[in-house]
Image 1 (spheres, rainbow, N blue to C red):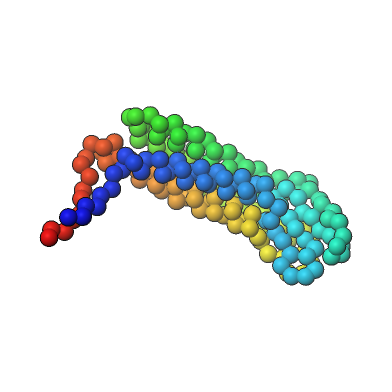
Image 2 (cartoon, rainbow, N blue to C red):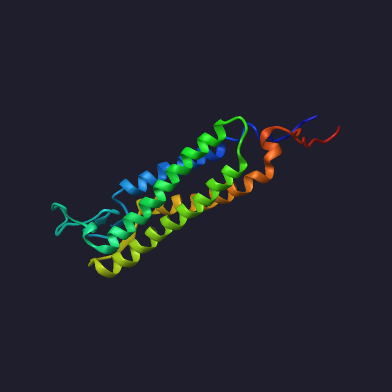
Length: 189
């Protein structure tokens, strides 16, 4: 007889682990220089959340301009940074919540709500950046929003999904605390 079951007490660290992965993706998005890149030759433009760099010729030096000189650059950076800081706070709160033997499930719903607020701030920064960048910064050739910008969107999507999980988690309080026997699915010979 083969038995299959799910022991929820072993799975309680999956959500803080996923939050940690979201924090890592957020760090990559904040530090990455690939928010916008030239897609075709000549590769003359590269931008991050903080600055826009261009070069006049293929082998030349990059000349960079800070985006913090623009109001929209400060707004995009500030809103994304606030969303990231809220994500870090949620990560710390989740580790604290899951380290305690008796979970406080209202506390966990609060983490879910805070994740939704973090997602709103992150999405605001991720929308402000391309709209204003493409309208106010002169771009030559074909440009694309690249890998670091994608990590930013991945972080925002993870915040939304994990917010749902944290809000729904208290519905399974007995299973997580081990008060219910695991259900086994088996076939009799």
